[in-house]
Image (cartoon, rainbow, N blue to C red; front, side):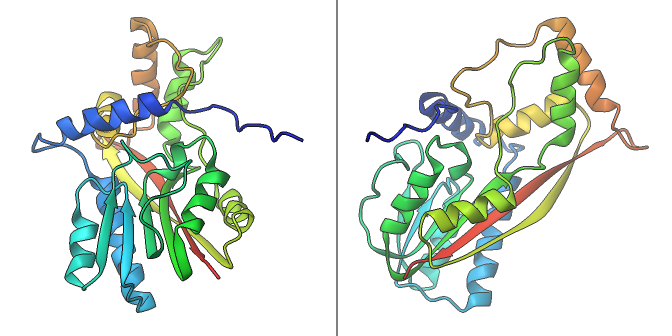
Length: 252
């Protein structure tokens, strides 16, 4: 009996195009990069806490190169994978690894269970996967603004995001021996909706939906901007929260 292919929610072509544009934007001094910086710092803290000393590691999605540089400083042989060329829904090259780190990447693949299976397959016995994603609960003010922009018939403009329970179930389904999923919040303040959108594009986190809605018209965009600012504090800043989920799994 043939298996049913996963639904096509995301466009790999649009995702890669957004990442390439983000790298161009990163040449600007004030380009946002706080999501990835937070994830890199968290991974390094986890490795230190676990006293993990892998001989080989694969780093996926860190376009800053910071994590690979830090690991090499610890004597780790590191391979780096560019998500603009690596297809995470296919077997990974160069395995096995003692450690695989995936940053802000797995939340935009259509076959997430399959991707996790491929990551597990690329680990050696006793290897560990650490994957950080932007999780459910993120960008509540942006979601509210998008709904307000088209009150009669809101279009799908935001990515579906996984929560803690779903992430744990996915790791178990991918046959990891032990699974730990934990979340933390990263709060950032914005003076306008446009600045938030610009920051997301700086970090390659723009819309990658396979069936994107048409751009907002002028009136709809103004409604979105106004709805976003209704959540502003006394200083006129809107505090937006990113929930960062970290999935950790061990292979037998």
